[in-house]
Image (cartoon, rainbow, N blue to C red):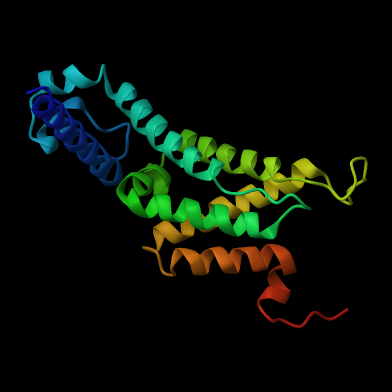
Length: 201
């Protein structure tokens, strides 16, 4: 009996979240009302309040659960025992894109166009940057870099997120593994060399 009740609750929450994501894409977070969500999910307002305190609570719950799942997936990406590994970028990118592919409606509503939720993007980028920092192993403990480590991590994280957003916005124009491979080549060789463009000195 308890299992049936749990499944019913799960289905109700899924309906609420699906309605929420669709409405964010259609009209933006600020314009959505609880009644809008209830109508789209085909429930009454009281049922909504059995599961969530209010609209911000629903947003926070959705973001935290998806970001937790993403973080768990990224944490499992192997770290090279040698120098900073380009293969780490490729593995993390593919892991992130595959995770997004399973939750496309959510990520589209959080990251795309004028209705995006900027705090979600910042939290997601922080997960990526922390993984890149974890994989940072300079050639020598006290070696001096030609550029700032913080600047490099910020650059890589921003480029990473830019590609993720492009991939979502354009409905996955390339397979996850191909995007990941090309991204790692751009980082390893520079964008001009990776594209096969001759560089004049």
